[in-house]
Image (tube, rainbow, N blue to C red; front, side, top):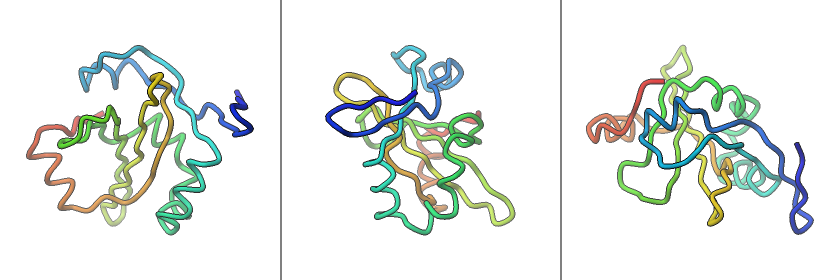
Length: 129
């Protein structure tokens, strides 16, 4: 489904699933997750290699993450979908964040460091999907 808001294009790329809501204890209902041209441009600019390698997997990561999490230190409502790629044990994080009107958008995609993964584990914020 395409939306055109203020001449910007957005489309649905996934859905917040009940399983994620339950695992993370979210106070939100099942709803679509969108991505837009500005989001893609951000990922291509800020994380060009990661986007080049994993950008085509965004829908796969949303539908079948290895882990989900809320950020351990931030209360911005972001939901993190993390998929582990082997060989190499590469952790790719996809960030979904709500707007002020609680519309969910994919905001970023990048490889997360082992140090950050350790922080997620020690804070008990990483949940196996």
